[in-house]
Amino acid sequence: EPVLPGSLVYSERFQAPLYAVPADLVTLDLAPYADIGLVPAELRGKSLRGRLQGRKLVPYDDRDRISFGNALAGRAEPIAWVTDEIDLFFLQIQGSGLISLEDGSLLRVNYADQNGHPYRAIGKLLRDRIPPDQMSLQALKAYLREHPEEVRGILEYNPSYTFFRRVEEGPLGNIQVPLTPGRSLAMDAHLAPKGGIAWI
Image (tube, rainbow, N blue to C red; front, top):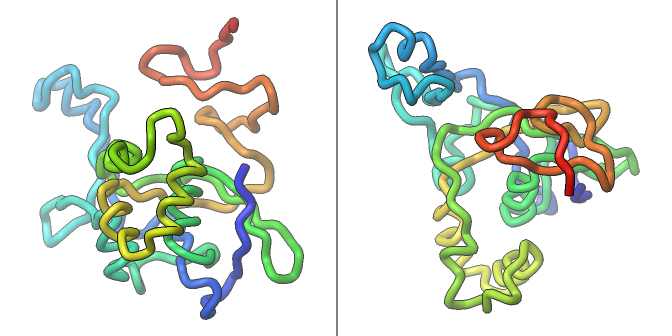
């Protein structure tokens, strides 16, 4: 789990908000519509996320609007503030972490929801700048730190944006059970049952 320095209040040092799920984020489960033939059967188990604009469901704000356009000011509650968008971005990729607060206490946060936009790996964008044998989260972070003028253009390549919640234990996996060090695995739920046993 990443441990990030942070604060419960905005300051010059801590400028990137770690948002809870916005009240205006709407999730539409497509299963009932697939069951009665209003959408293709292969969409059963899928969902749409957006927000209401009048009586229409429209796409939710993307990463660029949230991170660099301050689109959620007044619409979502920050759980905490971290140093910058780079640290926040990698916390979102990992899905859970600890925020080390100024008084020495730790705040545990975990994935709660996302904005409905597709995830796009920024590593693909940087293939010509980071050799394949050196590609890692650490290499990506180092590149962003070394090229601050490129940060916005690179991060906006991934329009997906993660919202968090406070949790008492964790990190939690996708069946909401604390992960076991050295034993829990990240699995694709389309390929393996959630909570299933794997032999390696």
